[in-house]
Image (cartoon, rainbow, N blue to C red; front, side):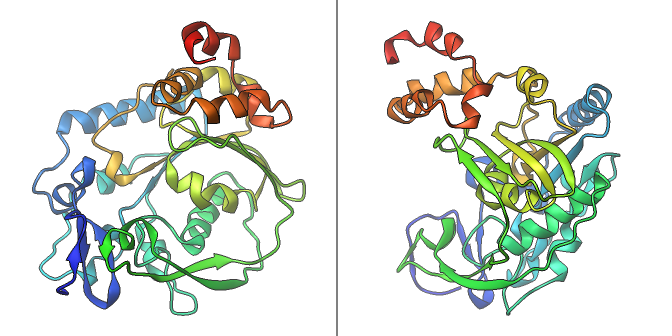
Amino acid sequence: MSSRDIKDPQVIEGNDGWLYLKEGTNQSWSYLTGQLPVDPRVELQWRRAIHRRAAMFPGCLHLICPEKLAVFPEYVACFQLDAKRLGRRLANVDGVLYPVQALHAKQVKGAYSYSKTDTHFSDLGALIAAKAVARHFAVNPQIEAAWSLQRIAGDLGSKLTPVVQSDKLVLTTPLPITVQDNGLTNRGRMITFSNPQAAGGRLLVFGDSFSGINLGRMLSAFFKEVLFVHSLAADYRVIAQFAPDHILFEFAERFLRDVPADGLSVESLIIQKLIEGSGAAVQAWQNDRSNSTHRFVDWDVVKYYAQEYF
């Protein structure tokens, strides 16, 4: 460990510049080490949820994005991964993808599938995961990948004093993608990626920041249209309206302590954004009829329940 001052005690400083999230709001370290494992009843709820989704949406896939510490544990002294953690157990369920080994195996230009100073995939990690998703949906994930390095602080390096940066792998292969983003942050964000040259059909992704940052873009290399909704729960009206060929449920491993309740509407997420003070961003999106994500919201419902914000 270095002697630098740490702004946030949730940052673990490993060897060779590797930084990791410690506990966070989801008690990541305690989960990964088995000190505070996920309640067995939660595992049963997950299995039921996965089975129910498979019955409702045949062929759907659950992608568990592994904690960086689960993929690269060797850079932290005196750390032992819990071999019985929930992510490992759910990986044996049909329709679940937990690509720990694939994410660990490859590096390019001396950089890895995760940036050393961020909790999320680099473009390499996102591409590895996107290829696995494409194969699940019987889409051939062919791409000539060209790479560059970008220096970033990330969500971990920015918490240190002084700020620490690392190399992030960025895909520089030109992709004929049109992107439309509703401009919100975190829950309630919606992005469409359109690529008419892709081999796959229409993919709907319910997920978190792993998809919103770069996984959605990597998926659009293989699917003609990708709609990302930042929500871990399925919105049935969005599914009916988008009419996807495939559905992907993506979530970070640290979110496994909570099982999402499907049926949560995008409208409820937008109303929560208004309550939290994001009114300007919501109104800018609501007024932009050219943004293709606009059509997936029942704005009359939003206005009815949040009239004071319009």
